[in-house]
Amino acid sequence: MTHRQIITIFLGTALISAQEAAVDTEMEVEEVTAMSIADIFQESRAAAEAGDAAAQFQLARCYFLGMGVARSQGKAMEWLRKAAGQGNADAQCQMAECYAEGRGVEKNAVEACRWWVKAARQHHLEAMYRLGMAHLSGNGVQKSDTLGLAWLQRTAAAGYTNAQYSLGFCRLQGVGGVQNFAEAAVLFEKAAATGHANATFWLGFCKLHGIGTERDLQGAMKLLHQAADGLSAPATVQLGRCYEVGLAVQADADKAFDWYWTGARMGNAEACYRLGLMLLEGRGCQANQEKAVKWLKLAAEQEHSRAQQKLQEISK
Image (cartoon, rainbow, N blue to C red):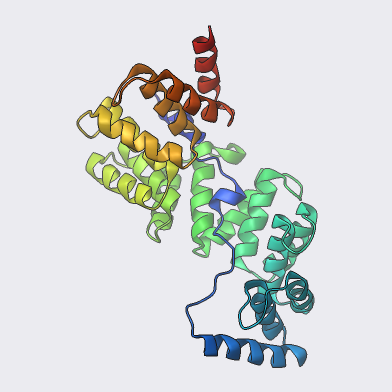
């Protein structure tokens, strides 16, 4: 089996998308005392009312999260717009997120990209990254592999982890007509060093099959376990496959079943499919066609072609 064929099998388990690759941008409250939270709100309000853009952005966060004040998306958006309008890049990027997710405003991909452009022009790394992903998908902006890759390259070069991962995935796929396994492996290694679970998976995958780097079965298994611990569903599928066929480890149907089960519970289509097959055939478990069909249907609902075909075979 060629490297291209091996990669193709797993591409469906980790399709590149802004939703998957981007850092979770949901704002989180730091662990601070109730008194300091109240102080943050009071200080931010005073400075915001005086026209300080950074304080206006912080005040918007307070209203979004209920930090020292009752939550209010309306007031949060009011202050966020003021900060963004004054050119605060963090606020502009957050405005884009609000439009992308429909938080406090009507969902609007075009408007989201408009704000990402404003922040990206100020070299805001998250905005640059998200704009690159938007160009690759054509969501809210002109679809262009050239522009998308250019933004990812600039952001990855600045050390932005998600851009390193996504650019590596593009090189693995050959997006824009450029397929470079060695560059992909290097980018995955950089992102994996920061704890990026899916980058860790793909680095392990590359080492497992000798794609773009030397084959290292022991190192690959260590990386795959790390990725699975980081909740990378594709890693659970690969671990299941390793135990199912005896790749880098002794074949063990029970362990294969357990890994597929873990991935299936995470909603991964390939894991659901393989779990269904094991239940259907009684490998690593007691055969149970009813449960097998349940998992195969879950995979089929995600457009998994082999699951759809298997269900047709069963129905006959």
